[in-house]
Length: 344
Image (cartoon, rainbow, N blue to C red; front, side, top):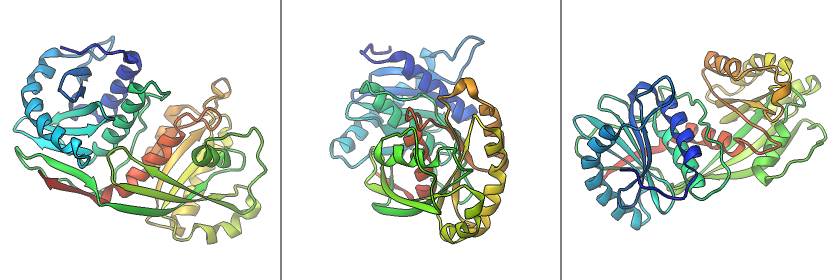
């Protein structure tokens, strides 16, 4: 039985639907519970022509597994040492993520599913659940994340609760932003670093450098980005190669209202990749607040990202929509290789 609480249930259901869509066929159920194991909201992967519906039988079926595991998890959470964990049975793989002080987000997967591709999505969803439960503004959209073969593999261990954590420490990465002039790169950086927006910025001359830390709920680690905002104008092309060297993360930005900036992305990709072959990149379509002026669809952005083998997200530096999500998505993508699993 789902527990009634004064939360934005419409937004929470929208988030869970996005999550189900992101995970795909491996998902059996996504459940938000309180610390006593009572269901606050949930959905299953079963669909109808109208909507994704909550299947009480599926949720009830996993409750007998979830309840004893939750008791062990709560003991760990109370010590502040847990954050995220997995538990496997013959029929299910379960991922548990802390969602603030009062809730836990549970992902129920098929027994043959891999945990590692789901892990970044679960963290992003859990962080959004925290904001929904706190009544803070948040977009329910979960961006598509591309995972690579180099990412860490979390081994399957039957009937064993494993604590997932990223090795403690501070990880610093040089992050570059590339894209045509006027697409909003500087505005994105200022919104992320200072949470401010100015209607007019002077064009970046060569490069601008800023710093910002990313923190995640339940992680005893920080990711510090040293952000290099590269000038997009053609006259700076010669000096950009020096700035690109040794970059470990990057954001390619285009303006969804100017198709010519979208058409230049592959050129930027071709310029950045040879300069830093191991760089982790995401693609950002900015200025979605100007929907009535849109010239590039979300589908086109996703198709290009798929072609380049990178993740895609749409943002608005003006409203702040998805700005933090973009940087956190990139941070999770590049630190996932430091994930370790410990038995409890």
